[in-house]
Length: 191
Image (cartoon, rainbow, N blue to C red; front, side, top):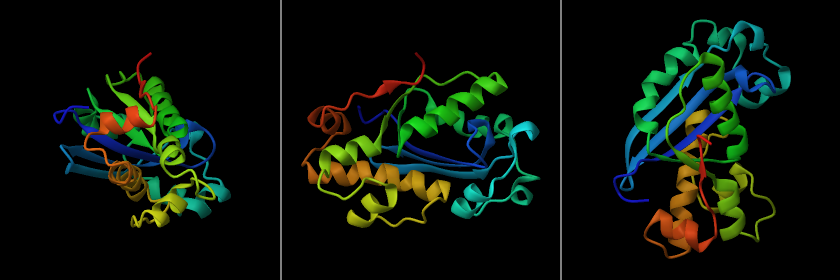
């Protein structure tokens, strides 16, 4: 990653197990190691997918009444899209967050950005193999990263901070160098 490429932490919360039930997004954008944009928004899921399950609500504390007047993904996406093209995205358990992102864009007929992504869980497993698990709260506690767990913006920031702390732990100065050192190859968002 060169210093002109944006590095983005992203996180979604969902109302239920369907990726179209996304009810919150958090995003933080870094350029050359500096935060240039932070974003957090509730999302109103499509009516058909907007059932809030008790399990999910107890985790993230977001309810149907919280999102009844929120923007839909169709309204939220244009606010973050300018940052996403040619970026490198990280999420903790990226399989989940990237699936939500792709599914929402497909549902609304929106183009995916030309971006790559990787998972901070995979990174933490490589750099911190001795931890009892690699959940976001466990890794954040160990690395002394402030975390309001299951708040999408806080989770997105923590994912990105894990990357920066791993750079320090591995004595690497560039993100590309870190990923090469731990044999992590970012995946393309558009296949």
